[in-house]
Amino acid sequence: MVRCEMVKKAREIRADKRRRQVLDAASACFREEGFHGASMSRIAARAEMSVGHIYRYFDSKETIIIALVQRDCAKFDRWLRRMISSAATIETVIANLRRGMPWLLNRDRAAIFLEMHAEAGRNSKIAAVLTEMDHNLRCLLKELIGRVRRTSQSGPEEVTDVTIEVVLLQLQGVAARVTLNPNLDRSVFLEGFERVALAVLAPEASAQCVLKEAGKAG
Image: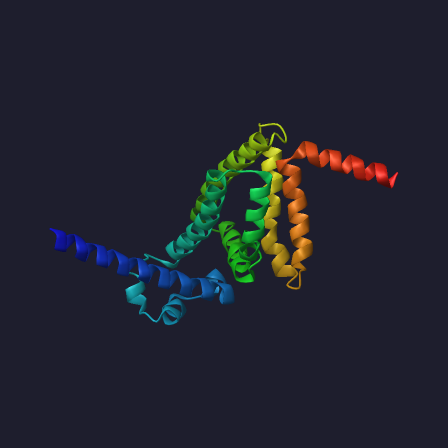
């Protein structure tokens, strides 16, 4: 029985490694050629596998795309959950944003992100997956922002849908900015990102700063 379990575990590890191998190859092909331009044969060649071998792990190119969407969203999901599980304060969230900025500003990730959303406009299955991920992201953001405000006593505990939309517009807009402006000054971007984050996490303190700056200007 123990040996059977060990063999089963070894097979699962190999299969998981193969799936990651396919996803990494597909991601590279999609970045270079787009979802529709990249054929299964090109993905197989990149993964150094046969097309038939790939079909042992994925039913179609569509299922590969969906798996990539889920993998990318899962990384962001884990990032937010780590912030929520920690002693969430304004300082720790800003520190986490700084650490996560290289990932957000990665042009390869941005290219795949834009491809995913473009494909969602044509494919209802992919749109459904992204819609579900969007719902989960909204819930996590509300929980994170609410916890920071309670911990820091920096604003109303109720997090409105308007606030969530502002955050999502900034987060999801990163991909477009990185793609259109590859020479983006990261320090400028980070400063702008932090200003919006502070306005969301500590709206009362942010408003006081704005009034103070306006008084100086007057």
